[in-house]
Image (cartoon, rainbow, N blue to C red; front, side, top):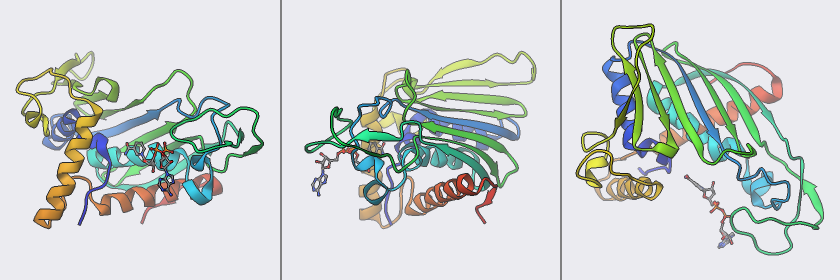
Length: 258
Ligand SMILES: NC(=O)c1ccc[n+]([C@@H]2O[C@H](COP(=O)([O-])OP(=O)(O)OC[C@H]3O[C@@H](n4cnc5c(N)ncnc54)[C@H](O)[C@@H]3O)[C@@H](O)[C@H]2O)c1
């Protein structure tokens, strides 16, 4: 039993999006686009820390950002059946740091070493439900800071979420099909864990609040003996998908998650 730090699904707007999908109000979900764009490794002088080494950091943006994207995709649309991915290293060498590092330290003048894991991934997804998806993640996107989110489309509607406007969900559903209006819903006490933080809609929650929810889920998992929030099983599913993305990119083929 335990809880895993897939914190983005703790956002009340994400919980609401999942509810809307499950209720059938969007019709049958046809496709999703999940994006995780960041610039944290975009500076060419960003030091060659543990992050860029296979032995100490494992994967690159796959583990760091795409892992969250896979969890969001599964949380919203259910299990992934197969995928086809491509990866790239856009900054192949970085300078070794000369001292201890924390965060994204810059290091100029040091000896250059190879970046051993991917800066970027794009991936086509097929879900067990028949829905299709596109997941894209980058750690080197100049001009992007925490541009994480999704667009989910169904036969009767759509939902749109941007982490940077965490408390808002774009919702379009009804009977129009074409020219369907999209409204911005400010999440409130009826959505996810929002009511534990704020008494009324449109009061801002922040990243730290998602971590508070994560900590509570973890403590409840320990004390009550039942898993709350994203489980270890969810982490295994995410890791399996990331492993499949690596294989798919290396072999240039679709990979089934079996
Ligand atoms: N869930 C999330 O949203 C999220 C967000 C950010 C980071 N992370 C994860 O958190 C982890 C840490 O990331 P970070 O950005 O804070 O890394 P970081 O490099 O900034 O910090 C790591 C810290 O650990 C210290 N350290 C290294 N080896 C140590 C040792 N042997 N003993 C004690 N301290 C040691 C370093 O000095 C440094 O201060 C990574 O696995 C990252 O993927 C998760």
